[in-house]
Length: 418
Ligand code: EPZ
Image: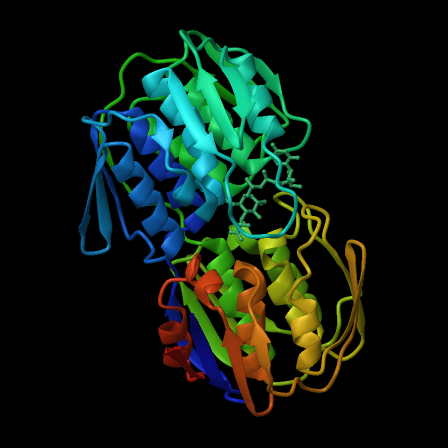
């Protein structure tokens, strides 16, 4: 179990390159199972969720070869429709494979997916959508068993704009007979990224980002070379780090429009932000003012995946804030850890009530999930004194070269294997 040792108080200066988006690469890897064509995904992040997804594809009979940071997937010899339960429990995105595996093999078997422990994370919308496409689904002994002689396009209305359900249905519909229309679909940029990838291999998908996605079934798919979107959550995490520690940080290779909700809040806090094409420069040299209320919402609202990092920032602003987490039931597990660092925060239900303190003080804290763990690192960087962040395997799921990138900006952070 690795840990970070951090000596806080350094301001951050310099530029940081942003990885390809984890939440684009994962569904794109699932989509690669659909085609016999060779797929090359560029600048794939070196994170454990991607490594685990590649292991799953290999278990299905796909060939996966790294070429530097690029990943080549050849599914022409894929011959297995059962996703190994040990790996399925490792990551939420294993469930996306249902759609592509059922499309390819007419059968699929998967244990209930794992992922960050941030809530109940049901898959009912995934399964309801697949049933609408003609999939027979049996749930037995912790497994989901799918069978379908023929996938047929259909109209599907999602009860909530679920990212994963939207992606799973898109994947199952790509080679179905006829047209599928998903209404109340998720609007996240990663949905449009998946659409663009699918169209690059010959699919006919349109409307992603609008809330209504249309998929016209095709018979044949080919190969492609594809550069996924930059990771808006990684970019946001580094901007919040700069806001908390003070200094001047340039995030490069980003799409500023994909984190406009965060940029708006950081401006309100009093940060100086300059945007130039695919670069965002954040400058701050003072204690920031609090923003009264923040509510996480589906895109384009404030992203739940930046909620923990932003709450850590609120904890050292001048004033009070209320953070409301509307998407997941238990996404405040990092708050008791921040309290060990002197935070004045109370969680009641889906709300965190924060009174800003002057500074955090270094402490030993435990990461419980990916984004909560990142929030603890940011608090340690801004704190007075030494901190240890334990069980950073959670952070390794979504941030490649995290400590190297932070140290490159002047942070005093090292990884220790215990
Ligand atoms: C994706 O998870 C992301 N993961 C999450 O990022 C992100 O937090 C989430 O979307 C919301 O943006 C990946 O893309 C791999 P949802 P997903 O289905 O698909 C409810 C990170 O930190 N729901 O949009 O699991 C669910 O309970 C991770 O990078 C159902 O009720 O999220 C939640 O309240 C964490 N039934 C809401 O929808 C379902 O069948 C949003 O979940 C599915 C979801």
